[in-house]
Image (cartoon, rainbow, N blue to C red; front, side, top):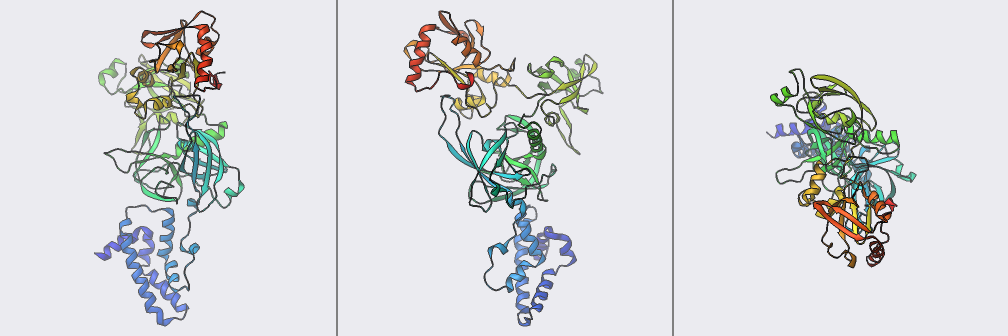
Length: 569
């Protein structure tokens, strides 16, 4: 039984060599000892080698289903050849550290990223929060560039990187941040940083059950860490940081805080993804997610093509599955037709001029769409057809075939990025605000909701704000949802103190399109009263002259530098 276990344990190292020459270690040992004319020690050395082999077989028997790191692969290979271990037994003096193990070049390209963040204060938008530091992982690619996660350098004040085995931190410059795909690109101006480093090469999208090794600097220590697993799922995933859905890999390797931005290697030492998030749930264990190479290459090529990150385009429609036979019949679909029904179209999307609600999308760029909204994806797999859209770039055109009133039409549609009424991010900029008579007006965004109501804002925020966040569509490119964030108490606003996070609909009977239009209307108002129409049919009325005079005293009392943010002036 022990013999069978050793065979299973040794097979993954090099099965062909093991079967062809099972006594390679003994042969090498005898040859080395004979060349040194140490006949008296032959038996001793042979016994050492045999003992080492038995010990190795037991230790590695549990590693049959585990993918080892590139570094451990190198040490195993040398051990199997019989060179390192046998020579070490006859060498004089203690071994030198540089001769103990061979460093795999791909590991040297993994760096540790240090960032100092200064987040905006959405409750007090004229100032920022206390700065804090974080560490994450990254890796070097061609063109003197470093890739990491976008959330690793979000709201950065200073970014530094450190190579493996180095004691020097180098200042880095952020070249681009892709919030949707959670990828950021850095560079280092110091030439010393790039000396002796070979950039990583990207591999193809892995298949299910392919081995992956995640390398990075997670919590629990300061040195590099390696976790191994397999690809357990490939599908369209929800990217938490970007609030988008893109292609992603699910793996069973541990991804912890600090692993973010680290590369995932295949068994050839090629980078096949970037670790970026994990699932923390009481009913799930060891579920980590990796950004795959198609998404990474889209980000890189987008930057190289445009000189900046422009984002992933969307089709700009909400659609419905067409699996019900009666629904299909009512839409004029025959047995030969498959597709999805358009429910709504984004008013700001380019296709709003050509597509109509209740159109049936039959194909996208020549790829047929199924009744459940999926398209073929490699052998034996299907994936949501939004994957086809995400492969395009902003401004690209796509051929869309639709069924309208039992007739087939084809349109060349220009693709654009998504314009949300309540944006998921504010592009790293400080929040905008406008203050008049103690009323603090601001535009609603997801970071604002999270700041006001915590990480469970999608449960705790007011119902009307959530409804607009989930279902409302922007009617124009510059439309914003403007609210009264709070009221800084003063004599002029007595009775209005309890107004909090309430949307303003109109000013002096004119609709409020965005925060800048509100500020312009108030500042240029020559009427006797300032009248603000809020939701729930609530109104606020102030005398114009007194409101503007009181604003100066309120700003002084609360140490606010300006009544209007710099981006609105």
